Length: 186
Ligand SMILES: [Fe+2]
Image (cartoon, rainbow, N blue to C red):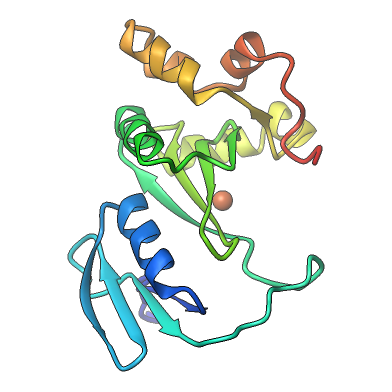
């Protein structure tokens, strides 16, 4: 059997490593394990580093039509945890660039100081098989992106006792925020 590597880390080259370091430490409740010689290494779990920053002065901004990594995603175990982080980050002035109810995940997309997108998410299904079955179904096939939702309403609803399973659906997002445009609308 061929061996399977596990995902280890992401490295960004940046001209503003202080801002990037503080932002990722807040977003991921992470800490710096090493900084020096133009490098910063950050982790938030048992891996020695999950994110590295290569400090490079005077980088050019990317053109809008550049090919690039669209986003990197991190998964919480529960909606509670995702929304707790949302509330903590909001208090620090870090707000999601775009909340999206994909149906398969409940996601909050954030934009880092360099304009890279990060998805913070929770799975809407208990198992990968259930998620795959949903992705093979009609709702997903009609629109694999999903709909926007208001995380502040979700926090309120969860705290008032609405079950997470009811909130982690496109139906709840549509019912509570029918006026929001499609995530790809702008
Ligand atoms: Fe994603």
